[in-house]
Image (cartoon, rainbow, N blue to C red; front, side):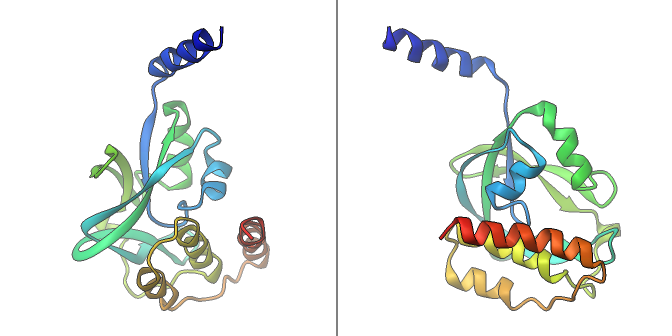
Amino acid sequence: MLFYEESFWDWLSVLVVIMLYAAYGSNLHPDRLRERVPSACLRGSAVLEGWGLRFEKRSPDGSSKCSVVPSSEILHVAVYEMLPAEKPILDQFEHAGIGYVEQEIHVPGFGTCFWYVAHESHVDPHLRPYGWYKELVLVGCGHHQFPSDYVERIRQVPHIEDPDVQRHEKWMSLVNHIQHSSL
């Protein structure tokens, strides 16, 4: 009977449509992404050649958020599967169509994924990320054990303090939870 049950679930999983999302910024850590998209399931991580990480996407909160640009660098991403029904929720969090544009990217070992890239009208290299935002990116990098030189480049990005104390405390609480739960 166990063989039948396993075969049934393998067969059923083929019928469930999923999407693959390539995360590179504050959505790197599974806890952060699942807070937004409950169906998100980590499939693994990958390296993309020819892409660089930047903190220059203008956010409605006045700070910068991550985006990617074609470059001679490498970019580390986490690949998640998620249900298509939850994509509009992620679109809303990411301000898709306002500041980010959804694109497809081929991720080695995973195939076609979607991700969000800053629209040129929302790029400002003079803006800085809030400290809590950069910390969310760093805990995601740590979770995936990205190389130390990659993490150090992110750590060196100048940041500013969030004037909204409640928002700062909310996100730093998540950062602290993630850090303590992974010890």
